[in-house]
Amino acid sequence: MARRKNALGLDIGSSSIKLVQLRETKKGIHLVNLSVANLPPEAIVDGALMNSSVIVETIREMTDKLKLKAKEVALSISGHSVIIKKIGLPAMTQDELDESIKWEAEQYIPFDVNDVYLDYQVLQSRPEQGQMDVLLVAAKREMVDEYAGIARDAGLDPVIVDVDCFTIQNTFETGYGFPPGETIVLIDIGAAMISINIVANGMTTFTRDINMGGNQYTEELRKRLGISHDQAESYKTGGQNADGVVPQEVDRILASVSENLANELHRSLDFYLATSSEGRVSRIYLSGGTAQVSSLAPTIESRVGVPVELLDPFKAINVDTKQFNLEFINRIRPGAAVAVGLALRGPNDR
Ligand SMILES: Nc1ncnc2c1ncn2[C@@H]1O[C@H](COP(=O)(O)OP(=O)(O)OP(=O)(O)O)[C@@H](O)[C@H]1O
Ligand SMILES: [Mg+2]
Image 1 (tube, protein in one colour):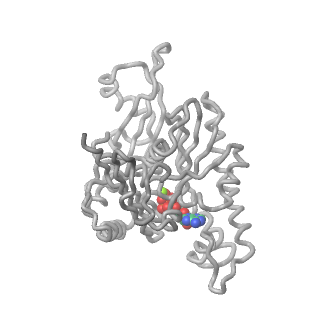
Image 2 (cartoon, rainbow, N blue to C red):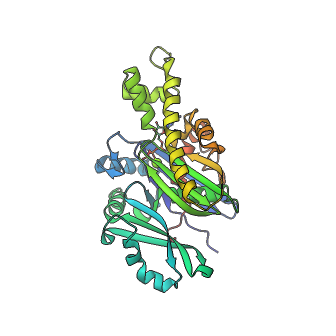
Image 3 (cartoon, rainbow, N blue to C red):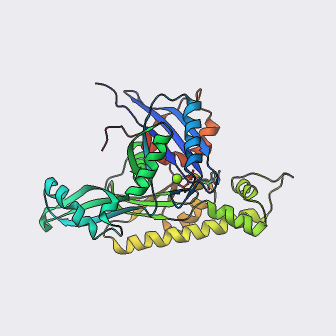
């Protein structure tokens, strides 16, 4: 009878922290709170928290400003401390799997099995072959504990630690639903990280994180035009300089970086498509702040040869425009995919 209680969704990204609170009622899912705060450039490097105090302080300021009472929070990690693999195992019962997963996992992960948290899900059983497909997730304990520690230091109660690509899958499933029999690629392009998740028939079949993102544009503008980081960041997001002009080269430089990113994505997808028995990819959905670079989606579309669409994390969420400024929502819309996916989760989820 009671409505489902949602955890707060807290996405600690390398460029900004995104906080989302949702409420699920009989009438649908409603946006309750949304907040974004920038982090200084060196606070998080390759997913590692380099400046914990600034992150804790930033989260505190966000929750104070919103006067949040809720404490239970869902967090997410990504990058090289997380290994996600689809593995084939002999058919066995859940109990047998619980028992043996640690030993099975050992041969698939490059870390000591005692240094990771393991999770797994049976994707499908193939009784005719006496086999089953299992999705194995291993996350470095150090990394998970560090992120949870940050949340605790900020006065919150971490109840879920998820993985970026799965949170986006959750967001997509809620907003769009997975079309049966089709293969969809979800790509999140943040500031420092690209996360790819290929979902066939509603199930993850391949994931990869690449250490690239929007920083590539800023860096290239900075170098090629001999300008400051801040000026480069401003040109990238459509701003002008103090004289109200935008150098002609800006568009060309942005386009060349879009080419590089599209080539990288093409390589990753090609690798998957060459080794997989799964069907053709029918559509790519882009999220992350960098999805807003206008040349990026069309460049990926022509390079990969698959239609590309921007993912709208608020597609199935009621947003009261009296409470939320639409311009603000639009500015962070694609970048909110992880935080929304986290905020859709309840504290009692697995
Ligand atoms: N309008 C825009 N045009 C172009 N780029 C933008 C725009 N808005 C934001 N960005 C870029 O998007 C990136 C931030 O995206 P996002 O918030 O998804 O990253 P993050 O989660 O902080 O980082 P990561 O996931 O890589 O650790 C930054 O590089 C920022 O410059
Ligand atoms: Mg991110």
